[in-house]
Length: 301
Length: 314
Image (cartoon, rainbow over all chains, first blue to last red; front, side, top):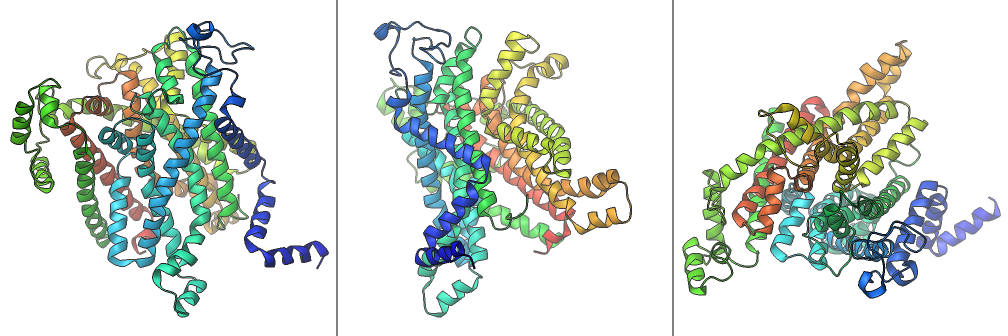
């Protein structure tokens, strides 16, 4: 045994979570697509959090407040040109990244926060409870995501909070089904049997021994659904039923670009590119994470 | 097989009941009341109340649900609050455009995804495979309405090959109809093709590692017939399972794309009904779509069990 192996064994014994994470990080950095997509995600997160640093203009300054030209072509001072009110398109896109990321994070927290416990409860208890919960999930799943979101928006009204809630609800069945499947396979394993044989009760076993094992697939699913959340938010806002001004949104920008599509087609290009790049980064990241975290796929592909 | 079908059909019944409950409850929460929707915001409050009373708005919610579902079973979906027309025929008049759009976008997606997914999956790790995977991910990452905008800018406004908007019924003028449907079908079909191509590829990769493929090679078959007769044909079976999800995506796509292209379909009707708080229409459409998706999933499950006997006995 070489000295690095020995060091690794010692670290692993001292702190298994940290050591596992290190081992995972080591495999992750060997995947160029993973590194590139994570970098893009972090850059967008930076732009979303530090909007003032990333933007070159006040996203709300107009031709009246600062003498900007309307429909200015892309240039050094306005990277993506200006819109019909003379607002800087680049700064508005940066500003709207905050909305996109917030919608993604909150809707996934809602979807996973409700869906994961449902999945664990259904898979672990089995029987009638499983049947009832999963049929309810099947019913929710039968609605196309955008239709379910639209129904919730119709009931609650537009605006960013309701959009996040609506998208979150559409994610509940995905998380529940996924976690139920994982729970079914985990609960047959020996460590669960061991925990039960020393007298751990159902809720404790579910929370301490089953829930942690659903973490990896949930992270993968979250990364893939993040992109879906951004697309649904943009679609709702594009239809005029999503985020309301003054909350900035790529979908709202495309909605106003639609009306000017014949005279100013360029306005439609940049917000859409922002959506595609962001969603693409999350999808590629999700694919890499799935390869690395899913033991069934390890070593193939 | 018969037992499997009976089991699956029985499992679908509670789902259908839950679908109707979800729809009813979600839309019962709408702000306002049918009375104010019909009479307008400036109506006399007592008149609004009287109308609400007559429409059963103040009845217990389970009674309202029972009345509504009883109507649905008799094909009575209620009346549009704006025009007072029955909702059923209104929806029926919108089916033509949506069904055509759905068939065209699904056909387009299958035409694109099956050959390239199969070629990529037959030789995984080649540049063609990486190229396909990349384009498939882009297809899935692109909002359909943005793709629609780009298509309109290039093929309608610049090249003038297709109209930017509008719908001509097929039996009135088939060529004008098809011209108007090409861009909408592409806008929906590309994302479907991305999904399907990845599925076909994954399934092809898996099939090519099976023993029967090795046997086919070992007995000296030409690579071409190994790929087509033993690989490709078996690889298509699991692809059937994702068709249910594709239906959901087609309908979801139609909601956005029909509004963008001004197609008089079911999707545009949903948006218009939501904008005008037409509760009976939205309820009827939501139930019809969800029941349709559940029914297609049922058919998909049964046909998959038929194609792959292992499923029946699990």
